[in-house]
Picture 1 (tube, one colour):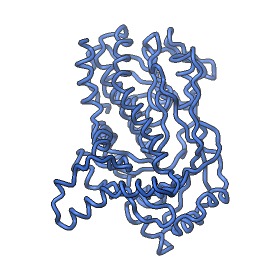
Picture 2 (picture 1 turned 120 degrees about the horizontal axis):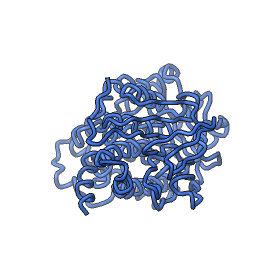
Picture 3 (picture 1 turned 45 degrees about the vertical axis):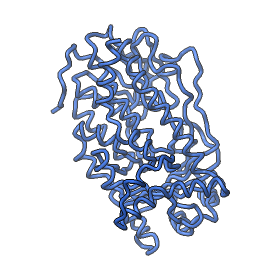
Picture 4 (picture 1 turned 60 degrees about the horizontal axis):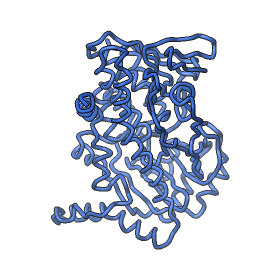
Length: 447
């Protein structure tokens, strides 16, 4: 049975365009507030698009609150740490402890999961909560004044509110939120390959066995390239995401990649990676891109709002794209719960924008900058970066040796491993989207 907070106002009829992670999370959050939710997805069904994805504490906090922990625990890997490695030797140059460090620091864990499993769990939960999810419902147009969408089959659907969760090439953004502007994704010079290797192939090689059996994320970083790799599906697959210079279509996630080209990009890298890449039988690639900072996420009518990649698409170098969409979902549900009628939507949605926009744009900017940090050429700057990344490793070594670390813990120096930076990490992972939303709503709705 659905579990809902009974809204103070009559339930609204809400259309969500897009059944990605953000759209489905929003459906769950809104159903728990008692609203009527219909999710429209252009694809004919959920598919195996994507591979591994990271779920940081700022997401697990919300997922657990929505009652999804048990379902997720059947599919996740619980990593011990993220190891930053030198590209050619594999030497660890930086570390971000995860388990149990994240739970101790922020109350919630850091998980790894297959994107398809994550999306299916969210879809099942949305439907269980009472949301309607329709596949093969491609949205051609969105009318912000009449609050309608027109589907490819000619059907017109109306609602009290429309939420655009339709990705970096959002049609909702194009037709309803920013119709006067052409918003093009900002492409980077890099693409990414993604691939998986079956766990049994990894275990058959004594050198590779530890990569699949030891729960660590490993990130090899080098000039203009990196490889992020970790086990997923309880060790059934080894996930690889490989950033490299190249071209591909923006917003297309399943373009076939060339295996020989893929291997050539990482020639001369850590020999263990040669062995892993030799076991890759197929790969896909996509163009890495983000969005320019948008002037608004809310339509002039106040009846259409953007979330997730439609509002703030970001490159994956902080592993926060999905996490920010999950935060959007929780925040938007809290904002809508403060309304008494549809007449309040404009004001409340603008508060949603005020709450979310600065945080998302900081992470968006930080993600792009993180790529520059990872992709330095060898030289003095790279040597200084690696030395600064060792801050956390030195602290862990001191702790293991029984040396008091109180005086060492606050260095005042920024860690180029942003996941371990003493100021940025708490701000990123310790964020409570619901508590922050309600505190800001209490403040801003009084102004």
